[in-house]
Structures are given as C-alpha cells and as structure tokens.
Length: 268
Image 1: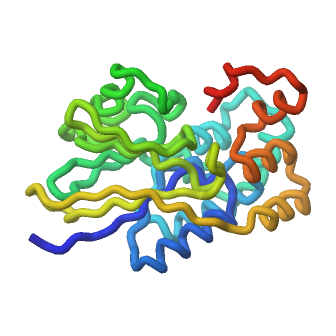
Image 2: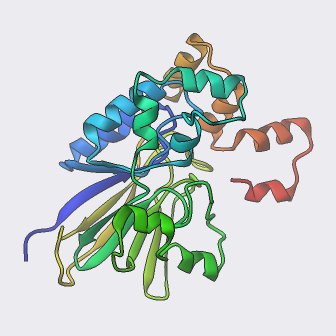
C-alpha cells in the first residue's frame, strides 16, 4: 500500500479573490499540492476574472457550478444591473470555459469512490440543503443523465462532496457519506472561508485509512470590501452583509426592516 495523500477541495469562491488567495496559501503551507474545485467561481463578488485565472492555474479539477452555467449563458433572458456588471468582468473566453466544465468528477481514495459535484446529482441548479430528507440524501449518490454525461456508467459513489449551499456539513447514513464543502468566498453563519481536506490512498482499490476534515482560514475581509467599493460593484450592501456576518443579504435586510421571522432561519 502506498502512503496516504491529502487533497484540498474548495468550492463557491464567487469572485472573492482575497479569500481564495488566503485558502490557497494555507493549502500550500500544509504541503498539499492537489486542489479540486467544486465550482461557482463567479458572481456575487467583484473579481470573477481573477478567480477564474487563478483556478485555472492552481486547481487540478474544476467542475461546473450554477453561476458558472447561468451568468455567461448567451441565451440568458433574465438580467439586472449586478448580473450585467459581473458578466462584464469576465475576460475573453472565460465564459465559454466556465460553461464547458464537467458536471462531476470521480476519484478513488482508499477503496472508496469519491464523487465531486456542485449541487445535486440531477442539476447544478437544484439545491440540496443541510436539512434534506432521506430521499434527497440517497439521491446525491444516484446515477443520472447529468452524472453519466461526465463519468459514464461509473459505479455508485461511496462518498459525495458537494457545495452550492455555502453551509458545510458531514453526514453518514446508509453506508454512504455526504460532505458539503461550504464556501471559500461566501460562507454562511460563520463567514470565515472554509475548505475540505480528503486524506487517503489515491487510486487505492483496497480499503485503507480515509479522512475528511474542514479547515477555516481568516483573511482581510475589509480589504476585499474596499476593492468592491473602489470598482463600484452593484449590490455592495448585500455582499458586505454576507462577508462580515455570514447572513444572506435578504435575511439581513429583513432584520433591519423589522420583517424578519423564524422562517428566515432556514433561508440559504
């Protein structure tokens, strides 16, 4: 049996270059050389172009996120000031690169098949929250048209690592493990960037030690917000609420307006 190897899994950078750079520096400081990215490179934050460039340079694998698919879609009919601004920040060819990313990616680690994807096994636009039911849990391990297009008729995964909801968790049921990697650039409740470290024998077909851990990495939030103000990014107030407090913009505004209710607690 070869030695154990560590792999970093990042997700949902959302144009937050300062957070991404801090996370990648932490990854490097731990001697980890392999970085896999679960998508949503762009949107919400001001530096999507720079994030895409850095992801292409540093990430061994990048998979498709809902914002990666939606924002640069030439057929997109819905638009507003912020969407137009974020879209205009992309460099030549970046939109096409984002939309061409694979839906998911499989690897073998200590005898376990690990599947990396952005949201659900059915679509990058279908969210599976932390408070899912058993059917949704099992659905994350299903073979679908979307997964087959990326990995063919590969065996069902033992472990699924995904992002999208920006809310990290680890759950094992029915002999399977579901991990949400949280968000590097836009994490909720604790806004400190988070990523996942997987540890095991890469390409190992036999059972061997396998580990999953979460790492939080502080960064200069105010410097990132100052950049957003300098470049005149629309929807700045909501971005500031999310980065400073880890509360999504609609919930924070409802709290200020006095219209918040306990139903908003589950807003992700």
